[in-house]
Length: 240
Image 1 (cartoon, rainbow, N blue to C red):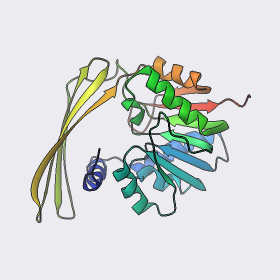
Image 2: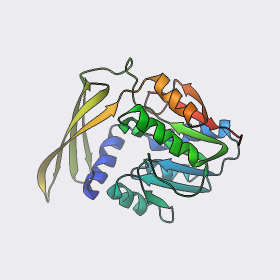
Image 3: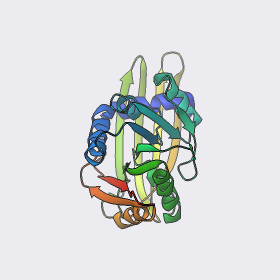
């Protein structure tokens, strides 16, 4: 769980690494409008600090967000006044309404630990999508595309603060175990160090597609995508 200050560091390090939320949101928006021209409402599940929502709101008249972290939502609320933001788990949240499009980006769906959890999450995304609406999911790597032992390192400087991030990822069972170390330094607080270990499941392409179908969504896998992992675009059936 991120503390509020750590949510700011999360934003800083990913933007410093070259993550372009505007370009990513534009690509996803294009996929949505290709499938449903005139789409006007969007729900971003695992919205984090709201960086994608900021840009989605330029196209979609009504947007909302859901996230598991209250601290992430607090940061999102500060940059998205008036946008409804909800605390919830993608496996069981219920907003009581549906949207033309539902997105789940930044490989957040990979935090589902089992195919049963993946099924529950896709069913919830579909449940919040209108008939004929669009679900867009940014997956984690597949077992055959992940690089075991991958190391990443970045240093970002902004407004008197320096943040260093180093990560190492290995395969553990059917998941990636990513160990991340952060060093954060500024003039007032000095230097602090914290770590996080994240398990992200290596679902197969077929397991994703099966979860889409079980949820009543007709999926397409697109090789291109915001994180070079591709995108799944599913359209909800219009029948009963």
